[in-house]
Structures are given as structure tokens and as C-alpha cells.
Length: 106
Image (cartoon, rainbow, N blue to C red; front, top):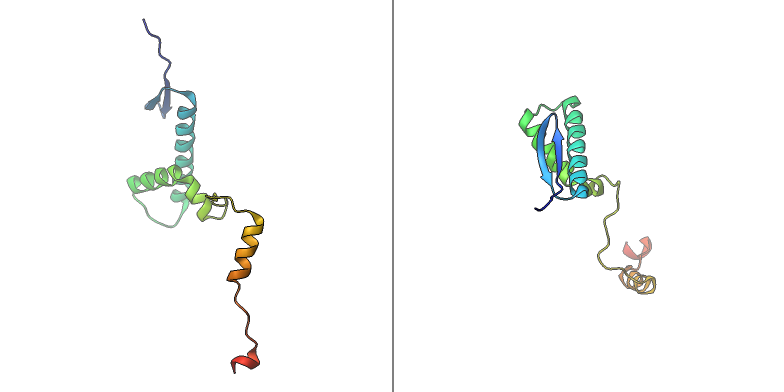
């Protein structure tokens, strides 16, 4: 006989989703908490959203929290390729345009 451990996320007395590992269940529960908090923010705003639109938007923003944090400048985007400092400085020197004096432009 096999024994399986399952982790169930229950919201407002209703089974939301079942997971095979605790970490995934905790992450999902945290996402739902964020969505609830966002729905409360939307409810207090002057914008009139239907309940379904508010719920969908809240869940979408909670699921994409990394992108939202970057958009709000609360988090820096992850750099894809680390650049060496010397190479970066050399590239900056090549890119910098020479500034023209006002007397030369007129």
C-alpha cells in the first residue's frame, strides 16, 4: 500500500487546490493572500470594477508580482549576463557622445 502526502490550500472554507509538496502549497496560499489584499485596494479606489474583474485583476497581479515590483521600482530587474566592470567602462566610453559647445552650434 502506498502512502501519499498531499497539501490542500483551503480558502474561506472551500478547497482551492491540492499540491504534492508543501512549498508549492505555501506559494499558492501566499499568492492568494496577495490577491485578497489587492482586491481590498481596488475596493477602496474610485474605480468601479465588477467583482469578477477585480478578482481576475487581483489574481493576475499577484501571479506576476515580480514584474509588478519591477514596474513600481520596488525591485531591480535581474541582469541576464554579468558584465565585467572593465568591459562595462570601456563600452560606456565608446557610447558617450562628445558634448558640443553652444558657441560651436550657433
